[in-house]
Length: 89
Image (cartoon, rainbow, N blue to C red; front, side, top):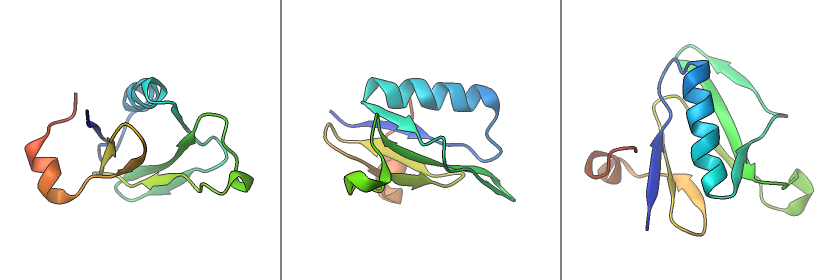
């Protein structure tokens, strides 16, 4: 089953907490070593829980307004066509 989460523009601390809960359910976490602020809000880097850069899996950068999708195996940015078809929980 595919699960999605929309990372909003101008995300608040409440949005961050919701994202962290959603990621945790799937074995992922926000990478605390990466922070990016932009004109449309923060971007977040996510990775598998416990992963480090040396593990060979770079993680995923989620920009403001993008939808992250977990397909049961990996995390990715949802294609625009899937975004319209499946609202975030």
